[in-house]
Image (cartoon, rainbow, N blue to C red):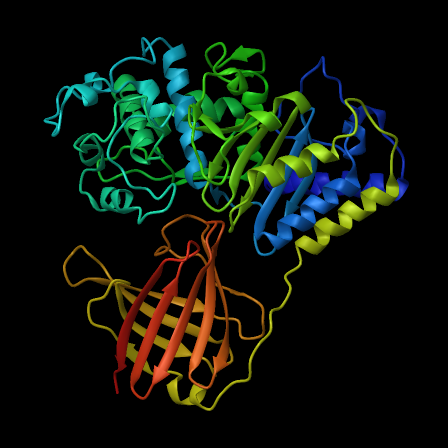
Length: 523
């Protein structure tokens, strides 16, 4: 049995014993003067033993179910008080954390500074790329500092859709053969330090600088200096075509290991008596911050790749669709979510804060503890969605292959098997390289209102990736299905419209983006 599975089993048994006995174990009570370190494993506690209300936390678990959480984890006084894995996510698979990766990248740069490899954070950025021929160099570009990159105030002309837009620059960067060169060549739109403009380019430059200073990819530096020290052993982190660690995302971590990153910051950058981060770096609420001027939250600010809510006394490493590591220094709490839908920072902060009733242990509350345990069990149970009747066309199109000319989806062919004992879809995608190449996938589709899970294969892009899909007929000629790759924090919906020998194939991503293609049956 793996260390992770043993830990989960221990968690379940401990909580079950407490709930059945209804007794208070004083050994689980918090001791603020003796921090515990989860390097080998996390300690487990009831919420009441750490001054929190189980019934209030049950409401947060329920909120997560309505917001498409994959997991929820809350640590107080160094002990896990809530751990929920929602259907379909099993909890023991590293989860993509999207832009929460940026905070890890920033953390590594801080460690590089503490190691004496970086002299100062106001060092001009271009000094680290003096061997490159860079376009659009002017006084503004020469003035960009590392701190500007960390605060998203570099001044590059960059469209990433922070306040709307097509995210065109970000998409162009991912298509570029050399992403770092693409970023460096961008023209300037503002004087550095003048305007907050969220950009995936900035953390990628930080990753390249880490490599320049350490002589190794940021992931390798993380393995040696951060992950091993914190006891993080299971992760995946992508690299760009030049072999540089992607600084803006593509890091996969277990929720428990996400919490370790937050716990390092909760303890001011210290871990087991060692100061890993420069003095003051981890005290984010005390930093000079940048106002994001976000229309949806004018009070939100930013610093060193963290989002900050000063009025609620929290800071958050956040990734798309609710991959969040939230630190509550005044409450001695770290909260972690993984999800497939945006998680409101303020809602999360309110739910967590309202569950805190004391800095010391509360009397046991078996009724509330049972309520929380029930909410966790319910969250882990998949609920079926409505299924429409199967039309006559299902038999006619089942097993037929539809082929597509070049299209924005990259779709080459589709074959549906909707009347088989094991319904599934086969599809083939064009590959950019080599020319004319393609790759085939097979995905099961649940037709009973529940997801059908496939198997991870070598053709899946990430280790442990588990495909899942479910579908239903909306009318006599329209079939809809949605898919997840469990642990990747996304949910994609497809609409297939059949008209004689044609198939209209429409894809809607989790941000509302639509791509489509039309194919013809290959009889």
